[in-house]
Image (cartoon, rainbow, N blue to C red; front, side, top):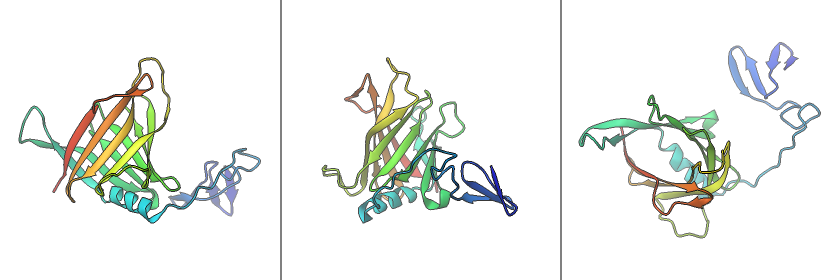
Length: 198
């Protein structure tokens, strides 16, 4: 922690002034003598990648799905919020349930990254690239496996592929595929057909 003119600067770079916090650069975060890390600049996002991120920002709000055991009954299953000055979209899946999970979406250079904070305790990261060589429909964003943290190994599975299909301004399909023993499953792990809550 540093103190500058009555402003408290925490080691992580957050500055607290009058109860508000914002991102600042200090020697620790900039890789100075105190931190030892070095940041590497990435290329700027292309218009196509920015458009992908904007589509995800457009999901802000509550989404619901039909209860498989009670046809015709819909309940909130996904909540999207835009955070961190518009640079991150946070998704809460199955909020308030024992299976609640979190996803975060953000730009990383010329790609969009999603990190899935899984209920089993690992955190796979997937990446979508606007021009990845595949012919995706314009209403679809395809995230492919990038890395995973806190992976226990062995038979532990992890999510590794996500396709978001915007079926209109108020309808969306999220299709997840998982990996086991380093191989992606042939079948979809879970598919959610969602509609925006009015």
